[in-house]
Length: 294
Image (tube, rainbow, N blue to C red):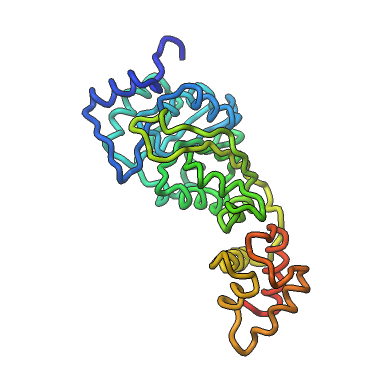
């Protein structure tokens, strides 16, 4: 909207904070972005237009929210901190396509939110600068709830973003990589220095886009069991896949059955979990389940 000064500048952010007497809560991981270029990259990565909706988590004082309102048909912003609601009411007043909901996104019925707020849009993306202390629970809820999402574009801790996008046999690859890649196709958008926030966090950040898959890349008979096998494989990274699985699924009496099962899945027992692809984990979990190892 022309004529309005952007929120995401150091001067305007400080002015809003001071006028409302707002103080940052470390426990809520509040770091407000004050860089126009990074905001532009975040919004561009979501691929929004006038036919699409955006769900924002943790809008803060609305720096990203106003950018979303200029790009999407409708925006719902979920804010847990009640102290920010009057600020958001004020700064979002020019944007009639923004709805602010007060609540904890981890406790909300998101399917209900989608039914109420996004009934008349073709596609919805989550776009957010997430609090780092709850990044993984929020992302896994979004993915596991199987919401009708196109993209999830979030700013998170750089280290966590690298783990989500990691390939097999890299040191960052682990159970989080497989969980995220089961539900989505991750792509690192950009690295974000700590200097573009107020207050500045102690860590580097990254913007990552998760393109939500219509179907998982592998078919497994039991998703819960599949993820239990993955978790077990990474229980102790220095241990072989055979030793880690023995600890979780086998007893002393039947442990000798594991190596033939691994070999029938074309997996050498001496390999470590971080060398297995998502396809190999799917094959392995299916064979374990068929053999009765739950």
